[in-house]
Image (cartoon, rainbow, N blue to C red; front, side):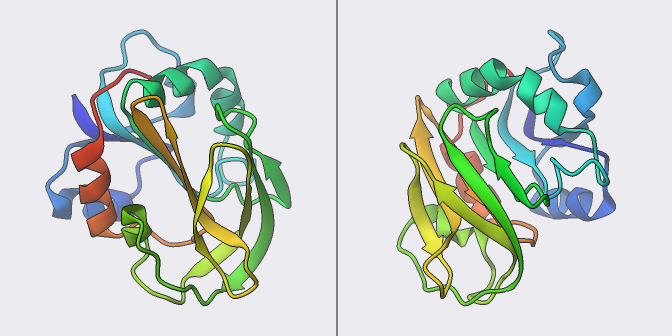
Length: 186
């Protein structure tokens, strides 16, 4: 069992981040999603650009895996998803409604008391857009235009954290997410 599974190709930067934290991890190609042989893990990370065919071919697999993603979170997994890098996106593969609008640039962000806000390392992050949270989601961090850039939703025993921050998650966030997650299958 790995602590973290990242959907996408192996990248040195994520590999270094996870290794520096001493957490176990695996990279999964979207082509193997749905395999009954996948092990349990605590946290699923879907990096920036998942819906943009110029970067990867992950979106069709996520749409096909909607019920599996829902079950993973319900059973205690933590799903962390970044921006899709397309003009607009409805996260129709999530169990709760969420919408994204592309708008790249630096943002000023007020601090938040919520634990998952530790995803950011700075109060002026680079963002690739903003989020419009539907029912079930809570806005955690907003930019200077009062647009959400980090939202969260409890779902079953797990948690969905979505962000348009165009940076790696902070080490503190990964530790926090793993501490509250339960191993589950995708």
